[in-house]
Length: 251
Length: 260
Image (spheres, rainbow over the protein chains, first blue to last red):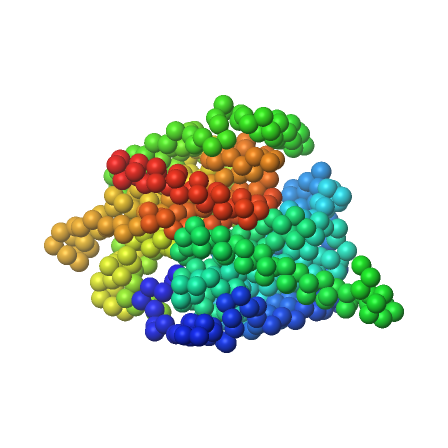
């Protein structure tokens, strides 16, 4: 990965198999999801995942701007993934860079794969993702937040969309990389899973993996996504609990 | 409106054919179009190539010039990849700022070259922290008949493989020297058409498809980059078997890029 001429590489894996923050190879960072964290949006969610802090808001279905983007047979899904200038160590120049635009594109396509867009012709479903604090895996945190926000907005979907990055750290396949592991690791593979179908609607990868390592990564990522899926459902239950835990957890 | 209708009729036809194991242009599901590679197509570039995949045509040009290294990588050269989807290549491309699809093509081509470490960037360093070679790879799509990522990345790889460091022109050395490649990433793109997954999508197949997956491999049997794009999904088992197909196709293309 981007380690050309870089500074000294930290010890990413201890002799007893512990990672830089003490996690096991298949262990997720801690995660907290708050559904309905904003007041103006039709749906919203805040995700704290390790040292990531990501807010997502959903507006729509609403009128399409600019109008020529309108589609007569379905809603369009638009996404803006944006990193705050202060979200990383060295100030990031505000505005949409090429990385943000690519991430926005693949996230919008992932969600259009699960939203019942044909139910809302000539409208737009707008997803805004703001990364307030970044520590690797922000696109996955953005997908998790946006997915809960879409559910909070009442947008009909095939399923929620849990997401996680798998990577290669000191030669081992590891779940949910943090910053040092991402910077100095050998590969990074973010993915988003449709739990119901077992299929991936977001998948990217950069680094070096053999065929068997790729297989192991995909399998580990699916397990990670299924664990995150439970947390997402719980966040929605917590938000819409009416008469007590049993009633809220009914469906 | 009429565009949407024709696209829908054509899309349905493409999917019907795929169900019968057939394709619009008569190819098999696992059949790549004819690929031709012409290095040195542009004499004014330091390295260049014209690549055709069927009716798709892409020109890549490499320009090398002295510049400053990034502060966080003082011993490494700078590599910049850009893809232009110029309006002459397709009626749907308009002049203006880069469309997200052009940005995606650029970044996926760049990702494979960078992740595979196709160029040893440390060899581009002239004076650490002060002077280095900056390598610009510009990809121009001139005829878009589908599968721009594969065409663009093969053109970029071939252009880099045949590029020369113009050291004499910039007074850095007595004579020019080749910009040797250390690895050869090749990207292979598939699209889903219903239950079928086909390699090397044509323009119409890209419009009709339910998801696109690009897998970049190197000559050491590593997967070095992947990108899922467009609306649709792939199972992990799909991805595993497509990686095997990408390894085989990559080896064929590497022979072509080197032998040309």
